[in-house]
Image (tube, rainbow, N blue to C red; front, side):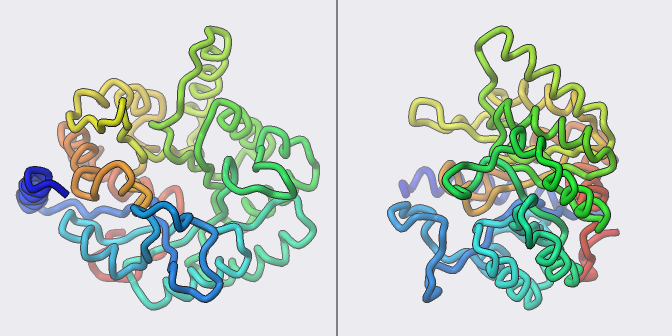
Length: 322
């Protein structure tokens, strides 16, 4: 890394620490989107691939603590990074050893014969807060397609079981088709809490009809109090460069905040996947700078209160709020 880049990061780190200390009292932060994996395991990991030299490094709570706590992070929710069934248990075992983890969202496939059995097994652990579904993993030769699967009665029945257990459906890597599928899932299971991840990175259609349909779906989801959205994966690579100015992102952030409102937006870093674009200080600085202009109550909602409403996470450390 170039010396000027390191110097900029150090200045930002100092600025963010100063901002946090200036708050009276400081606002605690729950990061609702981090991934954990250990590339040294004998069985390896399904993600990230070895050829990705930026990401192919063990990511465990101790590494996360060292870079995140100085920004007021007091807790985090782990989001699945593997379709392997037993990796749900692996994450729960890791979480048991570090109280910074207040919950985990696992991977169990709705609509399969053993879904209820696996749900019952992992839900016995109060740290298991839901499942992730969407544009993720190959499954029997196809990629998760919520808009297609919602037509299956057994799939909807499993979503109802998820809701009955008080757990959440977390989406993955949004596109307009997934947004439409989430709307249909909300229609089919009206009380199911849904969290849309990484919405800032969705590529908005350029075709007029497709764009109109996408915004119609998004605004309808925006009316539903049980649907939350992560202001995560905000940064963009534009022609080989990642803009560092909030002004580049402000319009989109204003749009999403306006559609969903201050009661249903969540902070998520997407660490360590976010390292592909920038280091943690920059990831946090952009959203902190954006939210800092809002009333303290709105800041608290974004940084931790809304995450409690969405995930019903488990307080494990005195520093954690609620």
